[in-house]
Length: 209
Image (cartoon, rainbow, N blue to C red):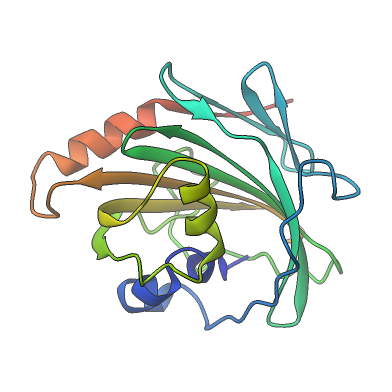
C-alpha cells in the first residue's frame, strides 16, 4: 500500500518524498500481540522470517542482528482496510523492518507501479532508493512504526539513511515492504552509500517456492 511512506516518519517524508504517494490518513486499531490476527502474515521459523500470504518470501539477517517478535494489527487507509504483520532485525544503529500486508476487502489497493524497479533486494520490488535526512523525536511522536521500533530497541532519531522496497501481488491485494534504517554522522559523508550497500548485503531476501 502506497501509504506506507506515510506510516513511517510521515512529517519528514512528506517533504522528502511527496511525489511517491498520495496523501493518506490512518484509523488504526490498537496493536495486538502475535497470533491475534485470524491468520498472521509473518511467522518466525528458526530465526528466519517467513511470509504466509501469496508473496512467498523468507528474510534472514547476518550474525549480530536480533529478530523481534511478530506484531499484528488492522488499519484503515483512505477507507481501505488492511491486515498487517511486522517484525524487524535490529543491531546497534541499524534495522531492517519487514511488513507483510493484505488488503482486507480485496479492493486491489496495493499498487506501487509508479515507483522504479528496485536494485535491491531484486527487480521484482519497487523503490526510489535510499535517502538521508534528519529526524527528531517530535517528528515521530505519533507515528506507529517508529514508536514500535523504539520499543524494540532501535531509535531512528538523528541523521538517518533510509530506504523502502515494495512488492505487490499480481492482483494488488498482498504486499511486502522492506524498510532499511542506518543512523549516520552526516548526510554528507561519502561513506554512507558504501555502508548502506553493506547493510543491504547483510539482509537476505529470498523468494520461496
